Image (cartoon, rainbow, N blue to C red; front, side, top):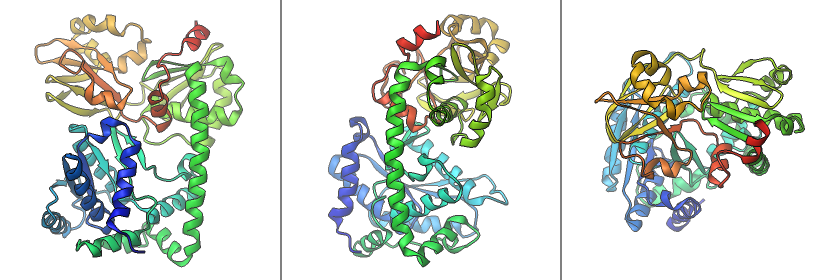
Length: 451
């Protein structure tokens, strides 16, 4: 398939037209592996940035898994420079595991990319295309994924406080290969893309033999996305009335309205609540939620997905499992930057100091802890001990200023040294939509029901 520059550029323009105005002004970072998809995206993103007066940089990650990886990364950097695209090489120094290498590499790569983009409030661009989408959907089908999983990758999503855009999901790889040929982009092909020991490669080989399955997979993905969006909207409306967010590690759902939901809706809702509170990368499995639900509603405490979950006569309570995950201890935070803490929080501060749980602050610096207690005393005791606090170099502590809107994470006026901003790292799209579409953080109706 031939692709004109206008067609591919339109895909990026269309996506930026659909996002919030603050994202349209953000610096752009393109994840570049050196393949045809990421190189063509970097080329188009650079043109977009030039037209709109934006900063753009390509990010090349060297996983250091193979001896030749460094020279290959340098070759990609040279190709980007040949096309006047600014680039930075990010190296992963950790030793790769003996198994599940692709999963490990994906996690490490995203952590580096997200950290780089988050530091400047930037947007991450990925070159995933329709062929990748079909493979992803069939892999998730093979692993008994939920409707949300079968919807495939999203064009716009938020992970670890970073907006991720995938403008090419509706374009086949052949279109990107044509673009590279037309614009003299010298792409490379990773040998691991042909190794059948990886599930994605096996799925790709299957689709090459059964070409009709790719279109069917994409149709199923589009249908699942429509269904999932409808479910989300229904749950946003429900949450706007019956959710009490006591803190990001303590959520309460009004019991009586919860009891009249269909069991499937109860499970669907709890999966996302637990992902948010527990800080997991993925929701719990439906069957695992179904297994604990009867005992939870009977008043027995259960643990799942990093959460305690139990019910009283007034509420279904979901709290972070403070006993399972040991504290990370105090960590340094440089001024005017952000850090990921305990794999749960993204923390930003204008001043340099230490980040630690309130429980640790209470033990190590009791007088300092007492000075911020009044700002935290509305929280239940155990969840309060898990809340991150800031201890300045002058010994003065600060309680967190929770941010639930991604735009405010980088623009809120309170990030001036008087308060630290804290963003829950794993906000599922369900809850991102809940806050983004203007629902209140505290429901008046739910407050009345629970008191």
